[in-house]
Length: 456
Image: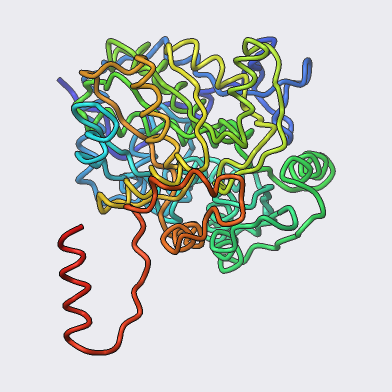
């Protein structure tokens, strides 16, 4: 069987179109707010040319596998390696890449026992260059921003988006603008954007207010928007599913569980699963489930109170900064994915999230707080009977442990829920806390601590 070229972009420059998720209108171009000109709903990217593909699923798998040993810059990217299923670029040298993707799939045996499943995996997107899943989408969106002639890109973010955007803008020779709400900022994340040269504006509003202002800005100034409503972002992020299935030898797990914030990532993964089934790469769909924090549970409430027909926004309040969003832009896409894959949507408390984060950390893996809602949610889904005791599960960990060190330090010092409404619900956390012990500098003192730790 002939293999595809390992180096060229295999689909023509006009291989995609924009489609409105509301009215279905198709177009060859998009306005800078990435909304439908007819009904103002969000856009997605579709590939009419796929109906005319001359190569098989096995050819695609073979080509992608061969590229893993290639030393070409575009093939070293775990995103562009799957470029047959991405918007095509005219020249492979035009891709802005930091060798994103290629993230590990970890086995979590202790967490599996805790959750009540036979085997549990974690796909760790926090091992991307800037420490989060955002890089997979940013490499594609930043590439198209530069190819369209933009010298400025912008986002509204307090979290991982700003770090990723600023890095890829700098790598591609562009300038970046970050709009952040004043207060409740993860400075460890924002520090990345500052170091990558972003112009940062702190606005006296919340995240949703920053996003609204950005939408106005991109319609008036030559600035390219790189928030997750940009459909190029979601195209890059969908490669997580391709890489995961390749790591599992194209045998889908029964469940994939993702955190839910602005809901772009769950939408992207679900889109990928539907596309690769259509292309014959897999025969059955995993159930894709979304877990949210109780304090930022807009999708949960939308499904329970409005049957997924109308967004129920909330005033977001959670220590998981990456999913502290009360008015998620991609909620319609997420609802559609849940329905298509038969997935569930659940919420977890701050204490449940903190416990799950420590349990993942005890495996030697570690993640940011938002990622840990997946394990906490899995426990609930097992108890509800949605996840059966013999089913396989993959958790998507979206951010690195070092993204929010204050959360981890406060947890182990026992200060995370001090003077909060959750203070009386933390008894189960004590056995997971590892605060530093201050001792005299003697061998006997250290030996005593070592002996006590051995008994615990």
